[in-house]
Length: 152
Image 1: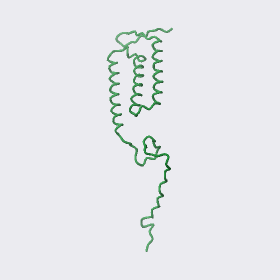
Image 2: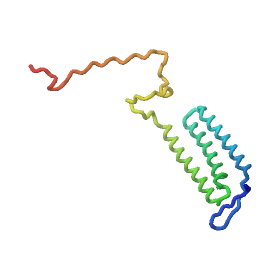
Image 3: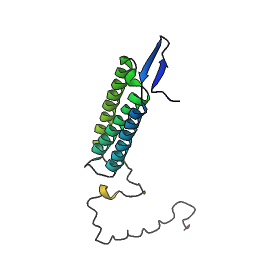
């Protein structure tokens, strides 16, 4: 048999919190809806990588807050725990904001000899309609040193 209340023992007495299955079902539906929004937002370009990250992190923060409040029963716990949770989110947002500001000020950090895949968006001057000329062949260097030189 299931009941609509649960008893949480904190060592200083017992507290009873009402958590019906309908409340959990509503939170589940909200989390599923936010997951659909996350997937949809991941396929949209919002103009910059910073905007994409901020939107994704905002949705993830809302989902994490709902999980912490309802499934981890933070809303029924002591207020200091909620304050710690909110301050953690704020500090995380500040630190990630500093990282995003720093990353936006940097140029391409790949070395000049990078041979990996080329990001087409990073090369706006590349004319794809024009044929690319092959590089000129390099003549082999003459052997140098005493072993390859003829004696006179």
